[in-house]
Length: 398
Image 1: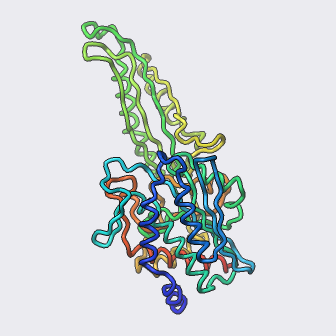
Image 2: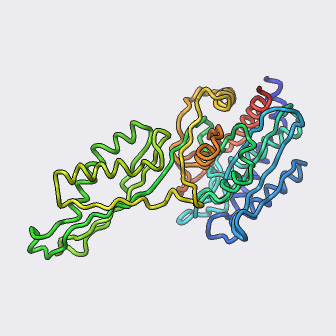
Image 3: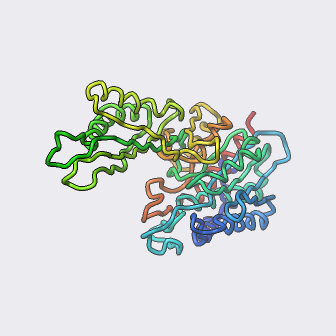
């Protein structure tokens, strides 16, 4: 195994991966770019073309979204593994020189470095190393760069509907995990709660019904009951926005509250509203003036029929065990297998195709979407080596 690692490392060029990352960061691919991912997709395909790895681009949404797919086929029977990442980024509002990447103290700074052009570059380098060494002796390795993960996941859905994901026996979504294995991710939904009161002049406040105070009762119930329950199940529940009233001298007749619910596989999308409706009923039993309309906002809705579902792969599954073995060997750290704290396209592959999927990549999730987005240079070759070793082992395993 040490000989194989050394062989692969001779074909994994840190400087090249850094260049790939920085080049792609310079290619803006947020939603304000008309052909959002096209330039990045063409750059990735050109890299694979240069290295004699079959690749193609698909137009997912006309003049808007693009995917790129590459295949490394050993020519012998075995499993198929997919390396997957998204090419789009969020905006860079307030981020200085966001698309002019710089290396500072061993880290590449810029929008998309961790989320997730650095991880894409590591996956590209892993494909090249396996091609040059011929170390993939069985099965296939797919590389898929997808569109629109930050919004509606058009790219991932297209991969599923075209059958690309379905051909994979397992997938690694290369989102930044600081080179640790994540075997699950949270699903998400946003809710709007509209509290109805009775508006009157503040001088006659006792003749009115204060909608803000009704919202406060509901918030107290969320804090006391629902948030602890969500956390016990591995989820989160965030009270994000509250709007109510018109002016200080008027009893507010309406108040609107917005809540972000992140859930685990212990919950389902269709059952998310029930806990809020039960809380409303409980409050109403003690307060007949309590009126609240509960409305899922459709944040979790994408293309018709799809939602931002959660994912879960049993820790005993080979893709978890094999990847963790090489993560531990390459990093020298025995890190626990845990859930990914955010949503990722892994939720789609798991929810709709039951594909065994994990999340593992270079970079920091905590700086994604932030003004200090960056990725450690030394994460990149380590990730490429982990991907390559995992592919060899997983694809050859029976």
